[in-house]
Image 1: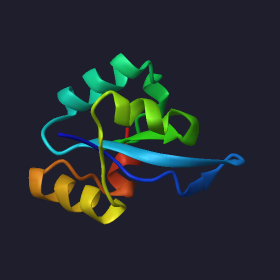
Image 2: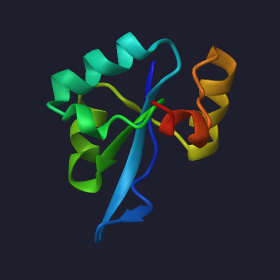
Image 3: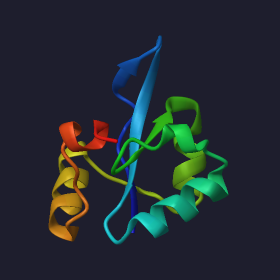
Image 4: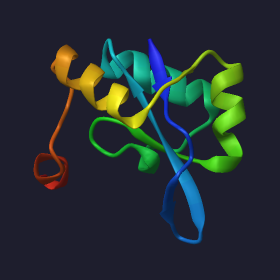
Length: 89
């Protein structure tokens, strides 16, 4: 399942959501590609999604979820990467 939280995360003068899969990175990358998200939007275990694209993600099948639910789902699936390991080469 693809999950997306509300666009509440400020950066670069805009608000952002997190787009994640509770199943696999392959599912997440395929969904992001269908939305036309650039690879640079991938942040180790999720995509950063600008607020203007939130409705597009939901219309394409992403399930609105809380940030906590996304983190819990990533942990349960073994897909969560801590910030430190996302920055490693």
